[in-house]
Length: 530
Image (tube, rainbow, N blue to C red; front, side):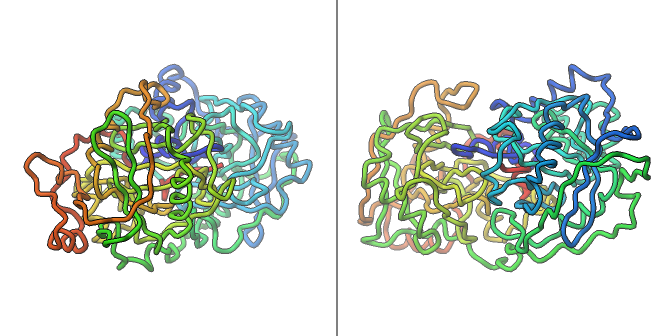
């Protein structure tokens, strides 16, 4: 489930979209990419674990306070990727930079001079296309470039895979979701481990030959917002050397490595926080009303300045300026979200009311329940602008909730109740600034998600925002749940109704049709968000 979700993270990336965080290249899902690549190269042998020849160029990376990691390179399969990394290393480009994103059992990502996941460039300046090659896969210890949706956006940012060992059942589940693996790939992912759902979308160009235990130790650092280590994980140096026949240790089992106890996360310390999404607005409270062309009633949002003050201020001020009037929802994915707020209409534009980007942060009181209003970003909440999305998501079964928990998501009872009744996209929590909730017009949002779209998820016919206005709540009906819009349902805004909406997490199960479109990143949310 989680793996499929990565293909949709890209859909929330604005402007400099980013990622190993995505799982998609050229706007197709990673499962489709990987399946097509594998089907055409079923007899290709995986080269990750082929030893270098004496005299071959290798990379020696020293991670401060951890130790030395050595990498074999594969110019025969990733010529430009190897050249770029070697030349940057020779220039000392990476020396002193940090691993700005670390996700346990997934990867560690670095190589950004900005330290935020939004910077960096190739040795030629700007981006380059490193391509992919089926000889190289995302086995544990693989070295690859982060990108912004395709390998043509490779730069300086890279990640080292840690991943996890896959059972036969897990691999079978991936295959049922559209992934295709050779027997050799299955053997590798079920013994050495890795991140198979990234294959075919990112440029793999190297493999750890010594120091894999160092990488696995580094992935245990305590992290905070956007998976950034709470204490800098510093790349002391990256040097270019030669292989002199030293002993090779490909696999974690080659080391005297004992997995560390996972550090207490921010989520763990907030286990008792109640989700506030469905708190009814009070009389006179500021709300935002959105009118869409061709739809018979508006969509109304409750805002949460107490949890997302900058996010709310930005949205209100842009709305007052008429910034959103006439813009479109440029990306729509059924059972996931509808995204708009870009003056360019292509996901590449927009800015905050202050100009440029801002950091809206996250708050555990606000989750990605169906109807949640949040900002798209380019790898961190520090890259919020004007683009926003409204969640549709899907209702999660007990088994799907358990699957998320098995992948490391720490869901509270409140969150479980919401995601199993109202629905949403839980795997986005903690990575994006949620700042509002639809309290009327959710049926319109769910209608919009059904429009016909092209291969880039852009509606074939414009879905246009007629107006976005700032108003005061005056006691109109509060209808948080899709079931409130069923024929014959009671939707009044009397005091009893408002009290119920404040103290309960959902009414009836969402009746929207669900698919496999947006299930599963992290947090394992995104591999390498660039």
